[in-house]
Image 1 (spheres, rainbow, N blue to C red):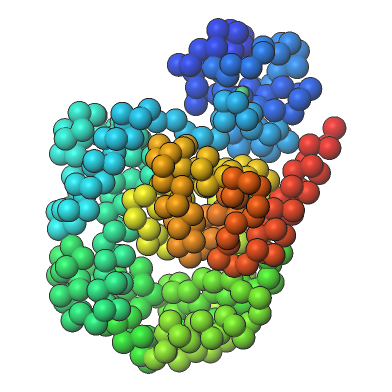
Image 2 (image 1 turned 45 degrees about the vertical axis):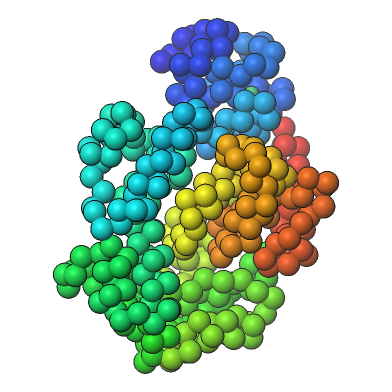
Length: 359
Ligand SMILES: [Zn+2]
């Protein structure tokens, strides 16, 4: 689509083109979807972008009216997807078959996959994986026998499954059940703009990511989650990997870039995932009230549940719960302390005014 056609689409507020490109207005520094209801700018002040990321990289801010960072799904689609979630939750034993699921909700497999991702931020398969892993961890913590816990969580019983689980947990299910007995966990912590972060890893993968004010507190938490493990500071051999993680994390804190290299521990319910997914789209430096979030995800009465979904968010910095405040403008709760929440918001606002001050 050439610029002339794009401009025509903007003039016509053509909603068909939403998501295909974005336009930014250099005089205001704001970018929009083609269908935005705001006043049409002068052609000479308009720039086109293929993605929101390209617009942001050019120093543009998302429009508050058409909210170009939020993917839209109509309420009927959301209802269908939610019904599908309930179905998946009740059938953890069945491998999710996209074609069969698509028939259930009268969508093509392609559209189902896309809509599901738009609502939950995960594919149906990833959603089932997250549910199973959550059920497995819970079962193991409750002391169920390993084979039972694996079976109850909907996994098959092949040795390949066991191997795969070991990668996700960072240790075998048996070791996880025993509080990490005899597992070597190496840890390293680093300074971020928000205090210390600690990452714990085994030879198989990550098993711990947390923030606190100081290293001692973090070691305490690591020890209480894995009382049986052998804990040791990370050696030089693993340092490059740790540096990669830290780099991804710092970049995430500074620019809001996705930290996909760090695993999100998706323990949430479908509702929590929805809240988290919405939170991920709140632009850096902006805040929403709990009630606004509840409204936006289609559960306007669920303000309290939104607040507790935020509190349950273990990796708060990877999912930006600090961008949600109480309706009266107070900062509300934040798992890692009000001061850190305030610092984070101040920092984001400062970055934003720095960006928009650029010529
Ligand atoms: Zn707009």
